[in-house]
Amino acid sequence: MAGMSKQLLIAGAGIGGMAAALAAARAGWEVRLFERAPVFAEVGAGVQLGPNAVRCLQAWGLEAALRAVAAFPAQLQVRSALSAGVLASLPLGPSTLRRYGAPYATIHRADLHGLLAQAVQELPAVQQTLDCPIVRHEDTGGAVLVRLARGKDIEGDVLVGADGLYSRTRAQLLGDGPPRFTGHLAYRALVPLQALPAPWRASQVTAWLGPRLHAVHYPVRSGAWVNLVVIVHGPAPQDLEHWDHAANAAGLEQALCGTHPELQEVVRSVAAAGGQWRLWPLCDRAPLARADDMARGLVALLGDAAHPMPPYLAQGAGMAIEDAMQLQAALAMHDVEVPLRLRRYALNRWQRAARVQARSQRNGRIFHATGPLRWARDAALRLFGQRLLDLPWLYRA
Ligand SMILES: Cc1cc2nc3c(=O)[nH]c(=O)nc-3n(C[C@H](O)[C@H](O)[C@H](O)COP(=O)(O)OP(=O)(O)OC[C@H]3O[C@@H](n4cnc5c(N)ncnc54)[C@H](O)[C@@H]3O)c2cc1C
Figure (cartoon, helix red, strand yellow):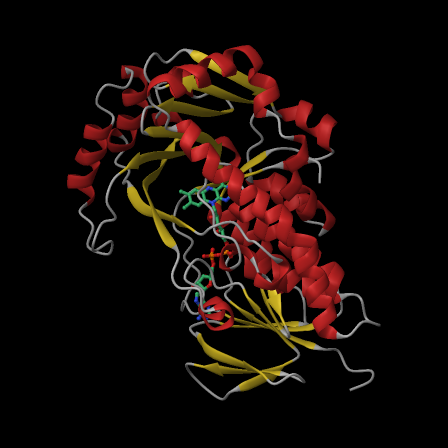
């Protein structure tokens, strides 16, 4: 109706859904956000945010909130997991700020989610409902009808599926089956900075590359805590809910056999500080092949629902945030018909997201290389390290 704001429905209030709510409200839309979980419980883990993602947060006025909780590492350092020798490094800190106009940040997931949620909370145009999964949707051409697991069906002008890796919105829109297990497992833990061996307390992102595994650690919570991730090859555990932390921490020790004692010492600091490892089987999909797979009619996909990727470029959440920024621009095209606005969103996003998915997958092969490929990788990193680690095509856009 003329003069009335249009209504956007969002499935999922993770990082992508929250960013989409903020973006749509800023484009002048009314937003209803439906989250399956009864409470927000972002489990303890960290997220790296490249300057491309931080730039979006700045544009939404969230830089001060980010500065209050994130860390801003001074460099990225890549080491051999076998010799502990430095293979390459890239200055971050002021250097990233100068080159890309925004810093490189590392942050606890709950803090990132919290600062987006806080911004959304302040917007009267956004209504949130927790404990309310979206079961299915129907695009009638003039509206989207959404069936909720609880309460009445509702109607909106657009549905955004930001419902993550196992998106129901995607299943219904594309019908392309579940994501695939990559054969890689991520062990994640948080430790207080002081619990790490002294040489590893520097403000940096450290990546250790070894045969069939790699590890990454970086500061979060203004530098008071450190997020550790170790990625190894292995079968998907059957029952994650009843995962035996002690037994599997032993499994992790086993996987690290043969790596340098300094890396093992970093990993052992988790148990020594009373911390727990959590396990994520890593899943992905083939990179997007066309715009049509990000939006059809009145329904669009965003974040992991649209383009899940392994975390080897540390950009999954960054891509969800960028999606939201492009969605904002598309939704704000008030003279254009709604399906064409979503089409514009998809056209603007799919190739970049596909490139990041493909590069993340390739990094997985390079990071875990064995034999001659590992040798060539290490030689290339030693020779051209800074050039290989800096990614202007990714950070500048
Ligand atoms: C080990 C690891 C390390 C990572 N490191 C980084 C990193 O350094 N940098 C980075 O940028 N990214 C990183 N990522 C990726 C990042 O975590 C994800 O890409 C990002 O969280 C995706 O956000 P999302 O909102 O799309 O999905 P999710 O965070 O999965 O949110 C989806 C939400 O939808 C809800 N939901 C599901 N179904 C329904 C339904 N039917 N109705 C309503 N709600 C529903 C869920 O409860 C959830 O809250 C990493 C991932 C892993 C596994």
